[in-house]
Picture (tube, rainbow, N blue to C red):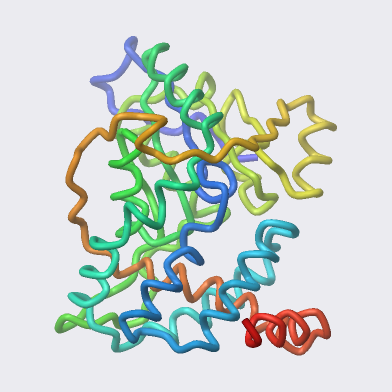
Amino acid sequence: MYDVNHPVDTRYRGVMRSAAFFDLDKTILAKSSSFAFAKPFYRNGLIGRADVLRSAYAQLLFRTTGTDHDQMETMRDYMSQLITGWEVDKVQRIITETLEEVVTPMVFQEAIDLFAEHRAAGRDIIIISTSGIDMVAPIGDMLGADRSIGTEVGVLNGRYTGEITFYAYGPGKAEAMINIAAEEGYDLATSFAYSDSITDLPMLELVGFPSAVNPDDQLRSIAIERGWPVLDFARPVALRRAIEPKRAAVAAGAGVALVSLAVGIAWVVRRRLTRQLTQASHELSKR
C-alpha cells in the first residue's frame, strides 16, 4: 500500500481538500476510448483494415475480460514501435475533428452523477488514465474535470519518437496522484478513487475511499474482501444530454491517442493465434 504521508506544500497546512480520482475506460466511458478511434484513423489512412478488425475484437475482449499486468507490458512495447515516425499534426487533426462523435455516445450517466455529487461536496475531479494525455485531456474538458493525467510520449521534429516518457499505469498512476496531492493540497486519506481494473489497485489503495466500478473478477474479489463499494454502471448516454461541457471547444493535440490505439492492437496481436480471434476476424471480414 502506498504511503499517504507524503510531503505537502506548507501553504496548504490547515486547509487541505479532498479530490475524486476517476479512471476513464469502463469507469466513465462504456467502451475503450483508444479502441474507439480505430475507424477515424482508418478513414484517414493511419491504419489498415486488418488493424480495424483487430481493434473491434479487442474492444469485445476489453469489455468482457479486461487486461492484466503482462498484457499491459506487451502493449507498451508494441505501441512504442507502432507510432514511431507518425506525424503529430495529422493525428491532432483527426482527434480534434472526431472527438465528439467518438466519445459522446458512451459516457456513463452514473459517472456523471458522481461528478455532480463530488462537485457539490467541493471536491476537485481528476481523470487519470493509461490512455494518452493528449486524448484524455480534451475528454476531461468535455466532462468538466479539473485536471487530467495520461500516458505521455516524446515528439521530435513534428513526429512521434515512440519513447514513453510517462506511463500512467499501475504504480505510475499512484505516483502521479501523490505529486498532484502535494501540488494542490489534497488530503488523500479523505479522497475518493474509482476504477474497473486490478492493475489500478495502487491507485485505489492510495485513497481513503476507493470504489470498484464494473470491476474485473480480481478487483471485484478484493473489493468484496476489503469492504469497498462495488458499483455497476450500465447507462451510457450522449454527453450533451448528461452534462454541459466545461469548455465548448476542444482543440488539443492528440498524438498519444495513437499510443492508446496501439495498446488495443497489441492486446489482440498477443492473442491472435487463438481459435477465438481467428473465428472473430473471419466473421468481421465477411461483413
